[in-house]
Image (tube, rainbow, N blue to C red; front, side):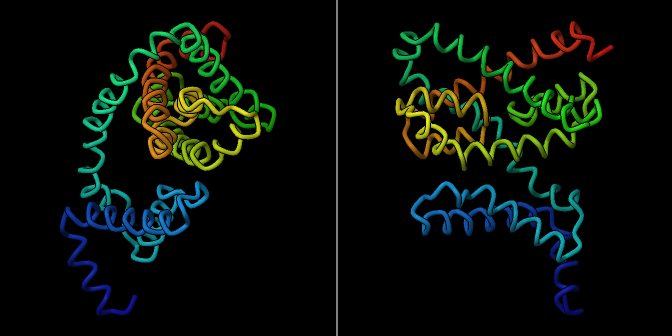
Length: 242
């Protein structure tokens, strides 16, 4: 940046609302591009917004902590937003009850597959044990995943990055996988994306239909709880945790 622009940026960066402002503007720009693309999943607004924010922070030399001092307001709203997912889920309660056994079976299979397939693939490529353990909770929503990683001996910061990558990949590629497998039921598609790709996948599911989003929200919540309960125990029993 030129000296004048640099002085202006230094002045603005002293405000804790800077992170919030650039986050909202980056997402608004990304969502506009997403709409212009005809809602193409390849133009995922989260991915584009993250790229914009990274570019801004790198170009301005702003530390992540300075940015997060303002962006934490968005982070705080994740809690209420997650609780609010119960509303569309309640509207689908009748079908959830009718599909209770398939839901539980799919949850168990999906949760275990997501964790142990990641460990197996990382091990096959020669990744260190901490990296393998950081990958294990990649399909769980970020706050829970970081807590699990810390508990089992992974690296929470690495887990956070892997969780975001997993969510974006699921949101972008999920539709193509479902179409390839000829899975068209919105409830099944939503539940699968919720188990595999947590909040980012759930947001994408809501853009498709309310039913798909409701089942994705259910899967995201249940998978977080189940993984937190089962993963440390199963890793300990298998000798991964000493």
